Length: 106
Image (tube, rainbow, N blue to C red; front, top):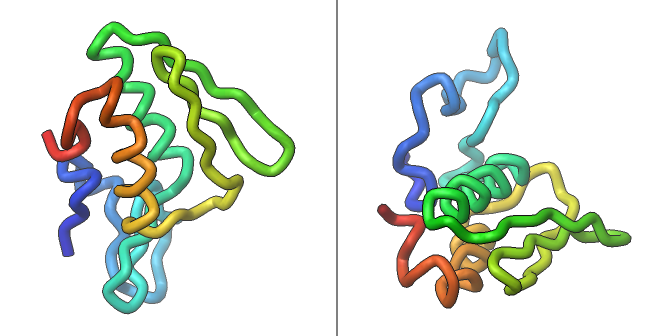
């Protein structure tokens, strides 16, 4: 199953569906056809895109959420270790004003 948000993930970052693995997943896990993305990977993806476009990027730790500020636009993401793909796409869409429409699909 391919992830719409992270098409450029390398094989070492993908989780195989095997139950007994020697290493933990770095990016994705497959659970009943729902892709789960690590929160840290979401933040790194935003930072990478902001840097490539020459925009200011900051992470602000709030009480129960983490604020992501890109070029003055601040949005928050919960402090969960893993986030499902639908939530990630909705979160990425919130930054379309500063990063461009469909920036995560490139």
